[in-house]
Image (cartoon, rainbow, N blue to C red; front, side, top):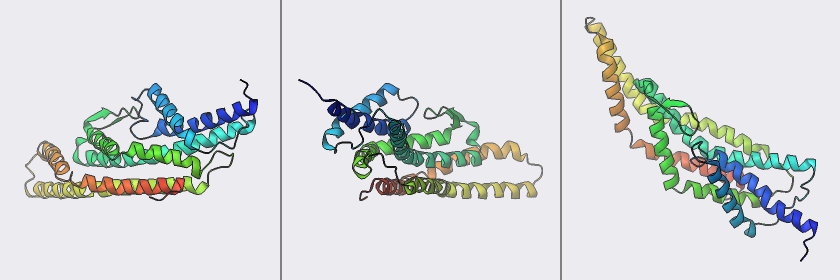
Length: 259
């Protein structure tokens, strides 16, 4: 049995180029793209996705693998995969930022832990919000939605040497602004409550200067901060659903499908 050289090139293009896009998404994707997830797991998951998806996808039109244009196509696939995975990462960072804001305003910022996803020290409140968001992401099948989007992207944005529209990258940048806005909205109620508490301590200091406001106010602020975070935790799911819908709309606009 003989295989022509063109058939071998087509087979390599059908599996190798989609694998680059899928692996690029998995490397930065929420949950799976964390540093504590072994690279072998990501590589194995990428291979499984490609092996299952390629038979139902149209053949890759670009087959000139041994050329300078091949480098540009690889860069293109990396950019598309990273952009799609980065959209899910912004979802998690929304609540990490909200937790950091709350921690700094309530005095809980002194309690910091190492974030396994990026290897940096973050406040424990931000890490707590990160754990909740990651659990909700997998419970709502966010990982399956991401895999469905990356497979559909090979139909909407085929591998033919043409570049992705710049507007898609700009949409991700604009959606990043919603990350800070949503984080502030999530932390607005606890911040307002802490502002009232700090104002009350200011009134107490003016009324009774003999009180040591530092020895009394700091532990009271910590306890109040924890109580307020617990009382406003019911708003967490509503904010997550709002951000989740924004992320789904963004992903659908990038790959050209109906939300």
